[in-house]
Image (cartoon, rainbow, N blue to C red; front, side, top):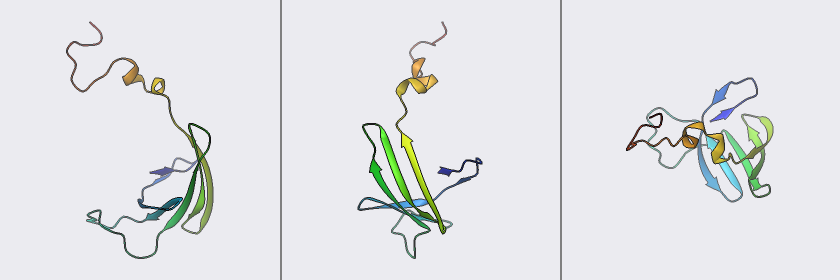
Length: 93
């Protein structure tokens, strides 16, 4: 899922390629097999330090550049409070 600054979101299927990914529009009933046709976009990816990712490319004719960072475990409240799918004892008792 790619989310724009105006919070509009769009989902694509992707395939790995050397140094990046190709994005494809999902077809109804797509079983996840090899993609056919021209990709909707291509992105080149590179590591940026220990926890960063930098990318650039084109999606639907628009040129984009982005940076991302790995989230820390402490950023996820449920994991901080000991949430597990099955708990032996409730957290709040």
